[in-house]
Image (cartoon, rainbow, N blue to C red):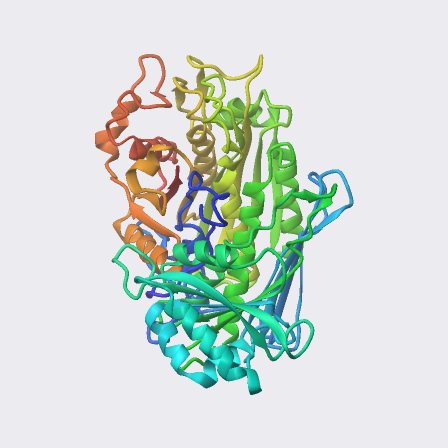
Length: 613
């Protein structure tokens, strides 16, 4: 797989603070998912559609087989509209149409549970037109880029005037105010804003518009994205008002490492979809606005590239889907409602995708002892949701990839009950499943040439008379027995069944990718900006790190040494326990090795765990 920009991913910074330092799901699958599902020759310039790491992860050692690129569409523009309805409904979540200009729009309305009331939500418009979101009269314009790049942009009077829409008599005064605001940014990075008269605007000539700058550092260390997109997301959220249309102009400086997909992700994370805020007893309408985004090349000309526009749009759509699911409270997003979301997406994706599920006691009857035990006492039953994608065009390079997501829609800790403060935020324990659902949807939308199977392990780790207990011994789908010594180490139990299903029931499987909020120890191991990855392949590890740097959803490798660590799970009564005896002995890696131990013994393909805290 040539070094090319990767793909979507949903991360803990999906929106200001709400999302989750605690979530922290890293790139490998989201990003990875694009790095390998499509590719082109190394000699071509980087393109978002060129690489999907799933292909990278193929064969016994995940050899870098690649296939020819497939574009999002042959049409000039792409519009994706998402509508979220009451939990449990099967209403379509997305419909696509094509329009006659080079821009893509992603907008959403969010419905209140159990009602037909739709809440307005921020629409994102990604454009390669000379003026982002042609026809939009912004109340705010935000200029984004490295500090040195923005300095050069301000020196190009024609380019900055065009980007801001200031012309005629007001031009000189406006540029003077704008330059003064930018020069007020001290240090290597920061943000600043001012108000200037505008040639356009909602009310025509003479209106006032806000102009803001988001300046990121010129240089970063080797473990950060070149545009420091985490800072970009945070700053964009701060300088953008809650009301009014916004134009975001990103000056890339011509840096090929700054990919359209990474920009789409960073911007999407600043504008979440889910909200239950009210004003006067009615849903607040401050999110009913449009955000138009365009990229400028090294000469400060709009990047007129349909692939780049589609890359930004699809990245944003997948990330916002995942974020919306993570933000939704568990009373709304039950296992049944999550399954309905997946079913609706499968239906919207067309006949190349099939949907199936194993529900409730049927899981126990078929041997899924981990998933069933964790979810059996909740009001809504546990589920293993299975989506399969068969590309219409397959070649000898077509690979088979399994995506396995942890979907604990709420984690009380079970009978190993969490504290009153430690339990808050555990609605996000399904972030792995949410991230992979967004990735799967985007990959299929891009017509990737590889076979994908998405396995969502959906449970609520509740407490009640039928809850599984410490000291219980579970028989897993792998046939191995597990002595429970921590009911709050439930994610590895459901994923163990998930990976065994993949390696047992999917023919000619090349690679398994897990994504999970698996253990708080990850935060200690790799921090809040880098997901931890554990993989049986050094090649996969290197590709994952590269994909993270290109996407901005950063990852860092964890110790891989199963022969040294698996003894942490030794049990006197079963094949293994589900939690380590010594928390000071690489417990983050241990958590992953527990899951790995439930792969089918004769499976020789790649395996990778994308782990969050």
